[in-house]
Length: 152
Image 1 (tube, rainbow, N blue to C red):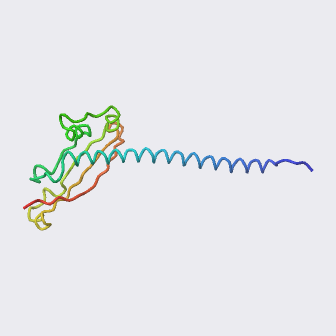
Image 2 (cartoon, one colour):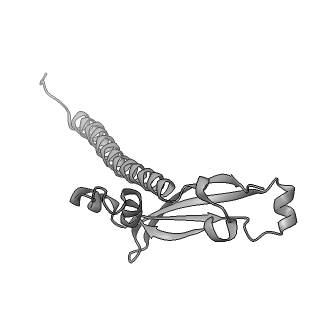
Image 3 (tube, rainbow, N blue to C red):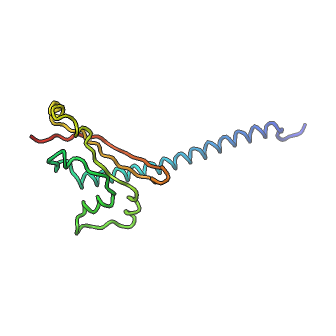
């Protein structure tokens, strides 16, 4: 009687080992994608906060003129928040915010005035942050919806 493994046992062990290694590599790849995604979402949240500080809804007087804010770069928002004598962006911050834009749109601003009054002068406002490489079609966006009430 000879001791050792048969060819069938070696093949079965190799298959099990290969499946285990494949599962580990796939989970590592997915966790790396998740880390990159969470970093992008964290930066998007910071851009949303910058936009809310630069253009606070509390300062809106006329919904036809002040509620909508066109798409702006995150670096422009920083300059508005910091002011002329405030701190400038560091090189790391410029790299971090590169390609991020912020926009605010009133969704029901062009509705009939009677409809808006029926809603209690309540406007639906959407804030959008976009990022990614537009040339390669790798655009991403994150948004939230809030409400603003017109003062009588």
